Image 1: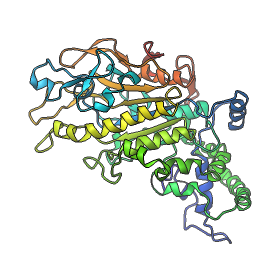
Image 2: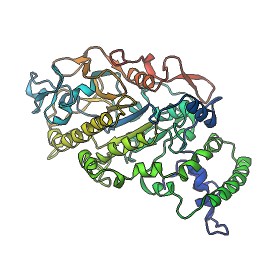
Image 3: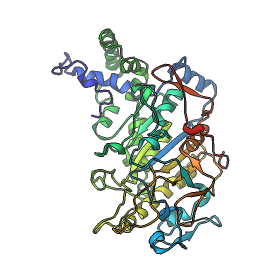
Image 4: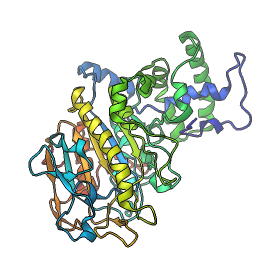
Length: 464
């Protein structure tokens, strides 16, 4: 089980069993699962949020975001910002292809995306990137070289969880489909100062089995609920940490998750139309690219869509590994030939699927990595880290799509028009969720208010 809080070790010693044969650790998993929901901070409580949502006549599909992290840094000049007129040591072998939007061209290896360019926006001038691998900037938009507040910066989904809570009692506000990478900097940064109760639910592996009560009636569950309250009172006497306080607020949501099959069904692709599964494509989740990256699993994008339909507000996922420095038998272009078609199929399927299901206004999609790649191809046929400029892909969210924002010079080395920051992209995503990133703050562990977006980020005017 992925134990988000290490709760299995709270009491120490061997796991004891109660008279019905259920172990204390198994029982307390109800308490652990309580923390997978988000809830709200400050004066907002989960019941008050749910009541407000009901009073407002909330639609079945709340505003949501799917964030796709391309692990290791994608090559912007080989994907969405080709430079065919540059010298060959910069341009590479790929040729641009026209899209269904006049004047917009992308890599020829993306025929699916080329057909639907009216449904997304390319940012070719993302600046302020870090120079080294660190997924943190992707997931919270902050420059990792700058000072951090007490407790650390929370990632986007954790901020949304803290501010908005869950949209439904049967789904957590924030789910991470990210595979744990052996290279630490490739992993999500965590909930930071908003607290562990706003960490994502991670359904990978055996934790998924605990979403369904197998052979336990509701009456027995409520009996366990009373016992859980007794145990929690004991734990509060000896543990007054933020993690413990956070667990109490979400017991009700845990019970809702356990007694509903909605979330478990969303994670089960056997319940999806086989033709849709085939449209996205599938990969082997046990094969981690280059061993320390993420698996190449296009089906994660389909699971993300299903989770959004189940009421999750934010879904994050990591996809493959894009840190292509080259080397004998491992040139960047060989790797692109392998990855690009699979990625094109899955991402175009996701965008089309959101439109076909009436979700394109409610769900925004962002795809990006931690930096761009060097304009000049190296002697071992690779592209190295390039923080000067990066690219991003945005779809859905009811935004004005079918455009390119920003431009780079003739070799894709520097932004020459409309520089966009991570803070701007994040302010845009918050705006989509109905949150004003320029005025809304969260309180860090020293009681100081912290704004949501870095660098004074503002919503991208071309989109909103």
